[in-house]
Image (cartoon, rainbow, N blue to C red):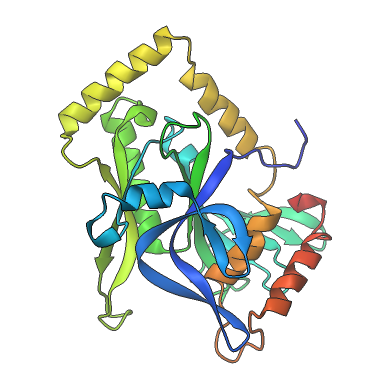
Length: 295
């Protein structure tokens, strides 16, 4: 295994609740009130839709995709959803610091150092909104690829908090058989004082419609028993995934960083860094010299 390269689950496509639009040469994120499932191919008009998007919309009310049937790839909750406080350099696209509120790994002139992490609200290094929670959830959609996943990325506290809770609860209540639970992603809305009472949307993880908790647990037990009899070693898969994630300082993908900066780190008013097409192009060029600590 190549050292310094995070080995992450194979990705077949992306799940989003928004998109990036270009206005007057400036690319800005635009939120939506439904899911969109895209491939990994991006054209000038945006991401190309994945065939699963059209298939699931056929049965969706008013063709609004607000639930997606999924299964987890791993029994361990933290392998399916990885979330940390992360600070990216918007000029270079490089991750500069990744922490969990206790400890962090930070890129310094002396290399990557382990330092205390007070969290984004109390950290001088990441003040001004530069440090945000950043989560990546990998899920399985459909049965065409046993190990292929779709990835949902978010910097939203509501989605990260809710998904973390649900995954840990389902892992516990199923007796550690999370990978066999029949689940679905569900889009929820809420209003807050910060949103000025306008709806904001976040992602939840629930049992599939019409399936009770008892039925879901029984199904997971039966499916786990069947897979074990057929020689599938889920525990070994989880161990291999944990080893792969821990093979690098940061879970880092060269193409991912460009889109993360573009979608989740829009320029603050007056910060002098509009995200234009030329800026995105420069980000991609800068990534080529990002340094071995991130490769």
